Length: 236
Image (tube, rainbow, N blue to C red):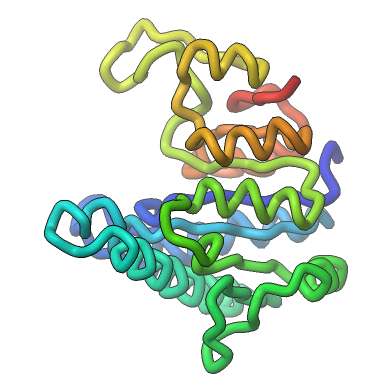
């Protein structure tokens, strides 16, 4: 195996039913849990950061008249809802899971304590980090990069609906080419939207490769973690 410990970043929209628009779809959650279970069977430690965009986004709230700071905290709460839903799905699959949050809510989850998170991972538990960084004006991409750095992850793997990073939007430009590998510098120079700038810089500084792949293609995550040439790897 190429990796001992990874952090998986998923958007909140990944939990939605794209046909009905339901924010949390039970079948989708079970499908995601099944993919994560396969990673654990590979004896790879895995942590997860999931966004909250299927429920609420701070920027969307601001456009509706909600104060930006308040909206961002509402978005953080949305990530906790998603984290708890994913935890429930994982435990139904027999996967031991812990939710840790940046904002204290002891009735629902453990507070984020780095040493405790590492201990959970070492014991084979899936750790889901909720509530972003605990601060407004930071995205869940930034939270994923921060937690990946703190737990010393071997890679940050970003599950999307496309199979990597392209020269242009493949939905709009069928002739767009997929990168197999690209450096941080090239990605910045070409302004490729992999993650926000703060998250990208954190990964670059801590030499954490970012792997972008299609999470919804069956067993694609397994292929990524076996080192097969799928998705796009961003590294030095």
